[in-house]
View 1 (cartoon, one colour):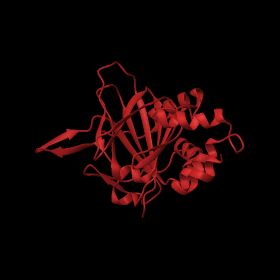
View 2: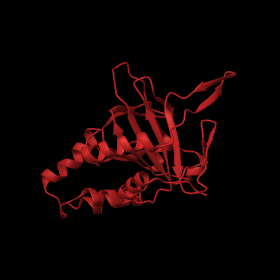
View 3: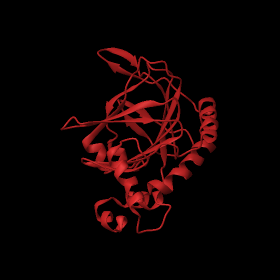
View 4: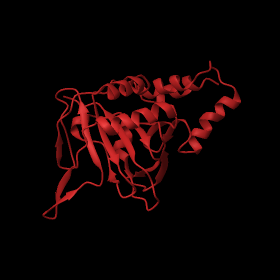
Length: 238
């Protein structure tokens, strides 16, 4: 059975690239190797490509080694220009429950939640991470939103990444360093939920159609958790 041949017409281009990249053995596959794909379908947080209702995502819990992740976390926390953003709500200025920063190429201005972000220039760390993940995603990202979750009180509510600047069917790559936090997906119509623990050094790539049919969030938690840095790489359409 030739998995890639059977699946290729049902997957977006970059996910066909993900499929090839995730296979370190030659095709055709043995039954034990085929089980890896079955496991990916049955367990939302297992490594590999997950095809779900009206979308797909790729997850790798240990894309970066622990040592790499430790270095990136420390460097990003120290050198990124973190900012406390806020928005007007019911006549009051309300702080977002997290710190954030926007980096990218010149001209990659991005507006969401009523806030317009003008990019800081790429740092060496961000350029390095981008180069590592872009071949797997099948696109070259030109911008990244960073969020620093200081403890369990920091969160981000249900939303989609479908702003006009991202164009149709955007590819979003989420990189995570620090404490593990729950990442939840919720189908807009069926309300079906999927939960993925985003671990230290993990990579999650979301395919564009997913943004039109699924919302996602990182909820608050009453459990004691340490700091977490999340980077979501995007392509801003000029």
